[in-house]
Amino acid sequence: MVANIKNFLGNKILELVKSNEHLPNLDFKFIFSLLKLGRITTEKEVNFHLNVQPLIKAKYSLNSIISKFNLKNDTIINSVCEEVNQEKKSIITIKINCDYFINEVLQNNDYFENLLNPKLSNGDKIIVDFSSPNIAKPFHVGHLRSTIIGNFISNLYSFFSYDTTRLTYIGDWGTQFGLLNIGLNKLNLSDDDLKQNPIELLYKAYVEGNRLSQSDSSIADEARRVFQCLETGEQTYELQRWKRFKEFTAKELARTYDRLGIKFDVYNWESMYTAKNILPLIKQMQDRGLLSNEDGKLVVKLDSGRSATLLKSDGATLYLTRDIAAALDRYKSYNCKHMLYVVDNSQTEHFIALKDILSAMEFNWAKNIQHIKFGRVKGMSTRKGQVVFMKDILDEAKERMHQKQIESPNILGISAVVVNDLKQKRLKDYEFNWDIALQIDGDTGIKLQYTHCRLTSLEKNCGVSLPNHCDPKLLQEPEALLLIQEIARFDDILLNSFNNLEACTLVKYLFQLCNATSRALKVLKIKHETRDIGAQRLLLFNRSKIVLYRGMKILGLQPLEEM
Image 1 (cartoon, rainbow, N blue to C red):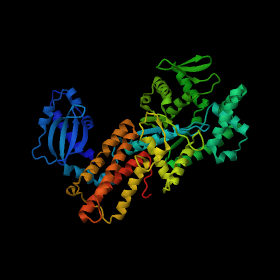
Image 2: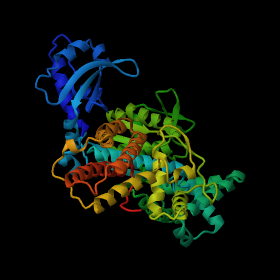
Image 3: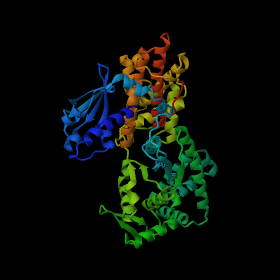
Image 4: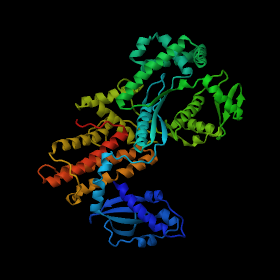
């Protein structure tokens, strides 16, 4: 792929600039980042562009770099020249032999047989905390975004050989459980009722308990009492009931995640970090002089000047307190290099506070905590009403695909919902539209699935075997060259997507790959051609399919072979 050529060019350029002893040293990674693949020209040359602005700032001369290229007897580099790009800035354009480029992109069997798995890491450990619903509140569209984006990020880190732990942190603690308990009693809901539909009924009970507390202060007092019993670990009826709620919820969530094709390595519960467990942490913070007593509450001062309460006057913990304990527990249990929290924009202040407090406790690893923010989804409602549960979204997507008389409606419906989300810029809010998300034509998840099915069918039915070697001379059509160029971009696209943790970069690329594939399929027929030409074209489409398959898997899709 293009990375091999960039390695070759990067090392060559590094040798040239290192020969000047009077200028600062540059490393290979820096040079590599400045090289970008351009277009295949009408002269059948491949352009690579070197961004020279950072080199100019470092006092390197363009003419000096260009003049040092020795092209005599060079079978790879045809020419090197200075050009001006669209931003009217100087760049160095290196023109590569087209046949060499084609061979390098398509011939690398080891690369394709390993399904394009490069290494950015030597197995560094990372935890990705995502989805993380609450048992007393709906598994809503915000959790859907966190689930989809978090799964993509986990897949991306795994792809680059990080030792990735996928963790969901389920909210099952706090005064809300007391309100939930009261609501269940009021609605007379049994355990058998909850087994059938735990997510929706627990939410319904929570809403009822919350409604009652608005008009009767004793309800709120009772809710706090129930939660205090849980915090102290008293073996009460409420504690046993809470354990059953956890069991019902975990099973229902597992079914939903299974529909999405998502597997978590770890299910953590907020209740793992009770007041009793957290007291040593509180004492440690007191010993460091980080806490002050304000009206019986224990409060910590943040770098921003704000204060955050960690322990209520009745001894109950708060969400932030439990998150501090959870971060410490995760670092101790997994010895991870990075902790990523995939949570929407509204929690920015919470994660700033979390990092501030851990840093004040002199945990150096706190700097590697990263809040992966995302915008909100607007306009998503289903025929069932305004409260949107994850199950409703997946059911509606499946039903709409079924109405279009499309096979595999569940997988295609999920593909449509996932891609519709991931093609948006992560930090932006967006308006959800069912008709756009599920349309057959246009840039949707269905387009990716359709193209993958076409390529699979071609391989099965073309009557030609893959060749042992690439013959660039038989792949000179404009449509072939365009597709080869798109295939070659996969390395750079993934690296860009990884550096910014932006799925839309990869999604946009896969749409472009599908478009180039579709144009090539119309022109580059395999049947009724000579065996050599047919085999080379099959090789081209095989590489396109492998790249598309890998890209879809990273997005969290299950590629279909027929539809």
